[in-house]
Length: 430
Image 1 (tube, rainbow, N blue to C red):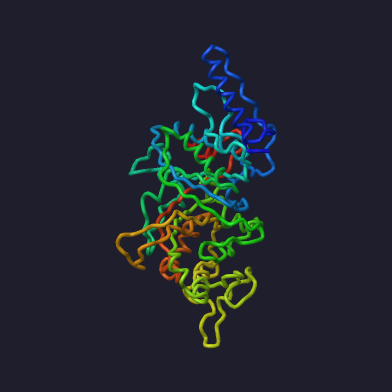
Image 2 (spheres, rainbow, N blue to C red):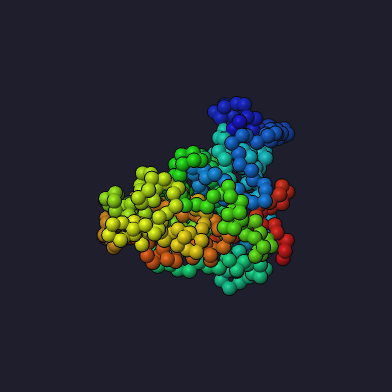
């Protein structure tokens, strides 16, 4: 079964496109002659097998097994009235549910005089486990000192602006946003197609502020993917099969507010990695910097990737086996009073930058614009990401190779039942 929405699933993509072209030509001729517009094909009766559920108590794309591609976009709202925002969220929810189930963004209409309901670049493609996750930024509640939509009193305390961390070189055109959309799929075109359709639906109401693509090696559910430094990324994540841990660390509970219960807070960080210099470092230095063996992923001195970090272990000279400023030590729950986040990041590669003047710290003339688009979910960013990263920003040995160039904070509300829309509890409470 193919990702063709309202088009019969049996013909090949090439055959369909040829037939569609002929059908549209005939429709145009018929319209000119006053003939009736052809009736579009019916929706597919059942979803393909490679789909992830959209409706439910929690949004997809959080606990979902990570897909291999991501397209993240932050939007600025220009709507004048709250009703315009709710109408957008209704359209977005309906379209996302269809896209996740292998359909087009809306039922197609073979009317050559009307705008297309779907741009069509995903016709013939499978759903590829597409998930679409929505978030609300601080600007939805208050922006430039204005309560634009009467929602300021409903802003969660946990949605406080992130502090500025040591070493931040944040760019406004890679940070912030009033709304966020993350589409993840095992096909990059499917992920981009989803965001593109939502952007089309937002015309006149919201515009994309910034966007970031990402990719991750598909190693199967039992293997941890590697980042561009060659190390396994996400080994220390909480166990998403442990319901108690998930409720304690990821889902918002009774502390609320009510409309956020069952939701989670999303932090994004665009982290450029100086790969051109990391690649020149000796293997031993790389491993000491991270605190794990590169190939096995095990903590220094051990063989099992999932072994408990030996934070108290010392060598024959009394020095810590895992350095005091090693990345994994500073990030570990044991070093942060039990604080944990669910990492769901993706590598990115936006090409190569050539600089006319050689700039510090490395004074290179060429640099990859590549690194990690860090994404994490947590019950409260103040006791999650902020608590963990404040020390890392000051002391992490990895800081000599990384620069944080973008950031975002979004409240991702609970999921929705069929017929409702994402965030409906927020707007119904006003």
